[in-house]
Length: 341
Image 1 (cartoon, one colour):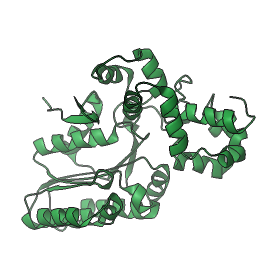
Image 2: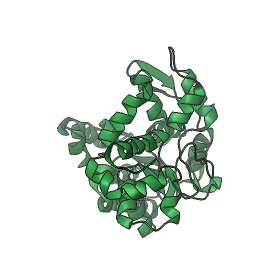
Image 3: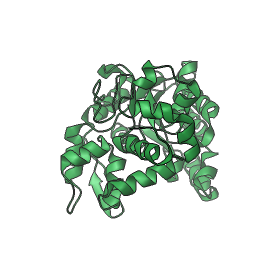
Image 4: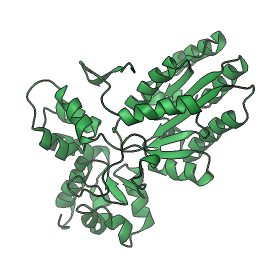
């Protein structure tokens, strides 16, 4: 029986890690067989990658792995490797880094500390890098993944097993890393309906129907949290997304004809002739996932999305990260252009 950790869903609201049964089983398989290449997990912002990685840390601890975990966004740098010098240096880095950006400068230390732990005889080691690539840039991200691969292939000493996982929401990081064939790229999608309902039921107080929550979020835990914090006012969340994603008048007037085409069917981004710059804008701003993987379970962490569900903004090849992202674009189109949506 796997001990499920408790996570803060919102200030003052802690819940048990929910669902992701297949994702948990995959971590156990990694622990048993090692990861022969670093596994780079990408997917919608807020889909639960960090929660899954934190649960993975606990699973790997139970499997007697030494752990190096790095997440500059949350100012977390953990080394539980039984090597005093490494653990002391990690604490010193945390003291030195005054911000998440400053902490991100130490991402290369992850590789150094893993090498040192192996050199000191740690037979099982897990290296987990979470949400760091947006601070480093895409080229630097690929170098970190290459460093993880080199530890797997050319360790300073022999080892029994290594698990190396990195996660990112940055779509362009995926392309740069994939170009070098240094990793296994694996998408993670938002929660499935059953797991999402379990999470929804853990939120106290009056709330909209589960059908309405599902229609708005598409199973994205972060969007559920944002709705809860906004007293379930979807207009507030859409307004916040409009600002966060810089849906300005200039952006909408420049790309409005294409945006108007894809709000009803995101696959038009794949099927129709559109500028590559426009695609890169949507991917970089984390509006869509482009060039979606085959829905075969082999290619996904946890469960894949349906092949197509236009109500949730999911196409075969392209998908809106959440329905609320699509709603933000629809609002911007209504406000800044004559494009109908």
